[in-house]
Image (cartoon, rainbow, N blue to C red; front, side, top):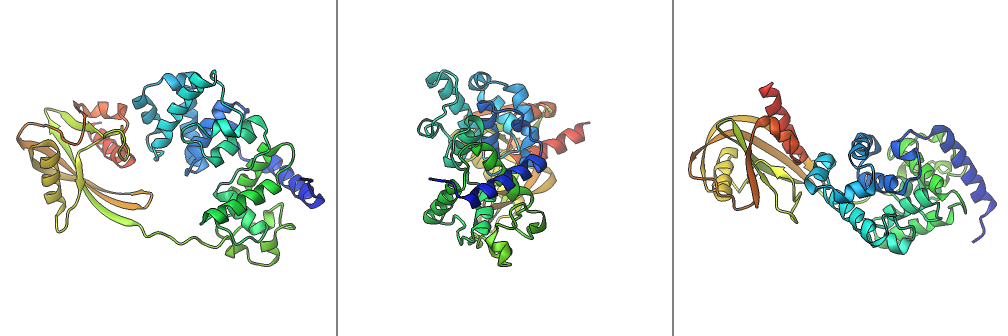
Length: 360
């Protein structure tokens, strides 16, 4: 399809702005497909400022696809600790192994092949193909959707498959014939820094003369808000069990929520239970022992996607019984100073920091 003169002007304005205003990011230093792939996996549902230190640490430990493919899963999960959505880390390792085995160690550069890789959807595929290989394929993240909706006055928010497809097609239509990678990044950058969800900085926008929403004074009304799913509140108790200066930890079963990570034992409240009652019941069911609770260490509030969790943490000792875990295939007694070598969910990391501070 021929590019219209208005599209060429828009492309020129945006790319000139991007050249001047783009933020420094470690994966923008070159077009290495592996580095781009890692960054895009990390950027799924995670902000740039959060990703940057993780990306830099990751590249020091796994500088090549080969290193990642051969790394232990526990090591990979430790590097991912705190980023959340741990299936991304496992899929990244599987992807590296498949690329090594089936593609001679080279990230595939066709849409058909790259979409076969675990954890690679249309967005990640488009980002890698356009940025690393220069292919003319669109990218559609939350920032791009917002800019498109305002720019073209589209009442689409990707809340349905039809709405999503309209936005993909719109982005495809304004891509330049060459330099699609920079154009996609410029669009995302504009949404992240100028075309903000609330109170967009229209006076600073290079596309303000092209933006239909801005001309109509409706930029705060586009895209229409998606209907929010109410969050679910959960109360949980967890035990830090001491035995001769060692602490009990167990590994979550692979395949379940946050599988492969280590944790302190415990579980959700049942109706009418106090935090202490919940802990006694859960530990008896999970480990087959009864507890003596020494003290309450802390209360942690944490969020997982749609869940709002309040975690009550207790310092405990075993009163009677012998530990026989029913919810875990792997468990251990470790020193407090050793806890930092195991991958834990984010809420448990806060417990560990407290324990380490008490030790020092």
